[in-house]
Image (cartoon, rainbow, N blue to C red):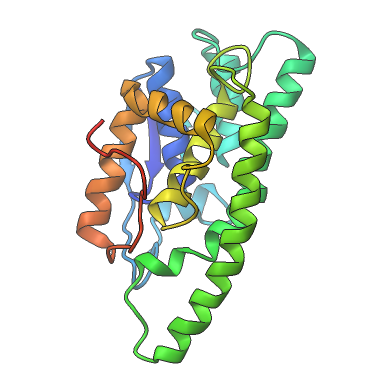
Length: 233
C-alpha cells in the first residue's frame, strides 16, 4: 500500500487525497505536525529526506518516492490510469494541465495574502490592519480570477471533457478562497453550481469535512468564510 505524507490544512496534499479517492486507490496517510502559530514544525524527518523543500505532499509507492502535487498526479495517471483524470486528446490534456497550473501557481499568490486570517491575531493592531489591507488587494485579484473561471467553465459540467485534475486543483483554490473569507460565488452561477456538485462527490466531501474539522481544532474562525454557501448541502 502506498503512503502519503499530508498536512491537515495543506491545500496541495488535499488535492492529492482527492485524486487518490477518485481513483479508488487505497493509501496510508501520515499526517505531519502543524499548528497555526508555528506552521509545519517540527518537520517530519521522512518529508525532509524526500523533498528538498521539506514540504508535503510526499508520496511513497513501493521503491518510488515523489514530491510536488502535480508530479504525483501525473504519476498516478500513468501508473493507475483508470478511472482517468486526464482528457484523451493532447490538446485537451494541455488545457487541463494549464488550468491546474493556473490554480496552483496563479491563484495561490493572492490566496496567501488571506492566510493570516486563520492564524492567531497579532498583538499589534497595526500589523493586523496592514495584513488586511494586503488581503483586500488580493481579494480584487481573486474576484477577477473567479470571473475568469466562470468564463472558462461556460456552462459545462467540468472544465474538461471529464472530471479531471483541473477540476481538483481549481476546486481546492476556490474552496480556500471561500474558507479564508475571500470573494463569494454569488455572481458566478456556473462556478457556484460546479462547486456545489463537486462537494457532494465522496472524495471531495471527505476532504472538505476533514479540513473543516482541522479548522475547528487549529484555526481562528474567519469572518465571512463560505459566504453564500450552504454548508449543509
